[in-house]
Image 1 (cartoon, helix red, strand yellow):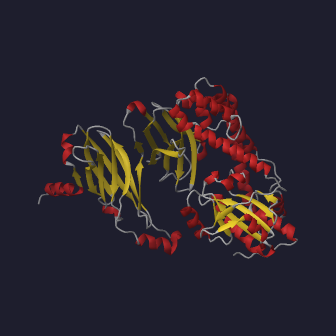
Image 2 (spheres, one colour):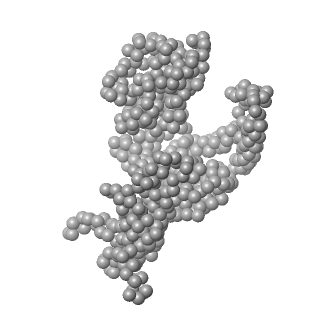
Image 3 (cartoon, helix red, strand yellow):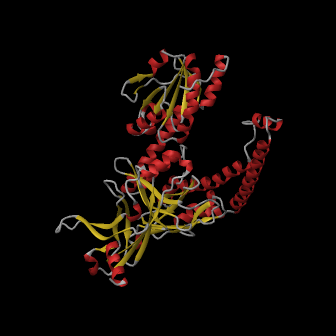
Length: 556
């Protein structure tokens, strides 16, 4: 066999094109690359074990590109446009298409179902993706690389793009995701996913469609550093928004449009001379603070025992004034919210008022309610359902909860409740109070990072003071039982663990004025509030004081 014939045969094995491609007017190309998972010593024996447990070698995994055909004359079904296998971790596919089309990229990773990616392909275009190997039982994750182009109608297209290579972090594998939300007719929140893409040499572009101006949130996830930042943009048909970096700091990136509603609402006030001056002062103050903090850390590490300098530092915790850069940051926030609140109250275009509210104008303030009420009368019924009524109701509930929280002051009695534990057994607060001297009622959720981080310290306090009559009652505000039960088993909570499972809108959470978590009330045997909003450390200090001596820690 000649070399040419062999090459043709290999190409035919690697890539099969759908027979219908000859009828199309343009071609598309899809490139793929596998990013291997490499277990390190830091992963320990477990990491090495999960790598060896991968169901199959992905370096030759099969990839299929298909579209859904709903032609009722032939019967609905999936039509393959192109397919092939990775060769040494690299994939090159080509196919034919006559117009921008929704397609699905699926990769066989050795599981009952392939991993998939929904994209839009158009004639004479190319897109790239990566297949990231992952420890079992999830063997791989698929991500677009460099660009996510989900627009099929040029009249509705918007784009958000940028070059983040100047950020002083390891941006390899960093992800950019653009999201929004609205509500359905039942008041349920719907997530709008406009695109997710991995940076390609620091660059990215996300193209999608909207038919009205909306607020989107862009999140930049720096996977290698476990850091992230996020920011708002206002997108509308025809908008082109560039994400720029004013400095090497991740938090110093922001979107720039130069025109349209994004400029009107999120850029114009940034050009105010006073804002620019304050921003420069903030940068200088922040750098100075970082340098001083690093110097203090170096001084502390040089001391082999507790020197007077270290003692002074410890004693000064909680007594020092607010750092200057924090005050300047607050001033910068006020520029934004003062401007947006003026727009919300006085804009001639009701859409501008709505966008200002969605960007945070009057958040947590009574002033927002009459503006929502005005918008319900001036905007279309469809828009009111999707973007006004539910937000207005949530805002009203939040204000009511804040009022309840204020009314539940020290010396007041907390409401009784009756809730199930993970086994379905009901518990009432009144019964728990009768059996104990003091009870710490703690609201939490499985998704709440600070809640989870506080559990070990709370376990230590519970182990130390249960002998003195302390009981802890955790109330989960998760939205589903599975998340609550699984996290509870993982954490091995030793106290009474109950679930309301209605987010912040549950009857018990509302009656306790819960607007953030973790949130705790320490009450006596009669249900009278002794202290509130305590951290586990503060709870331990308070119990030290009322018992007259520091209890010996015993972690359950």
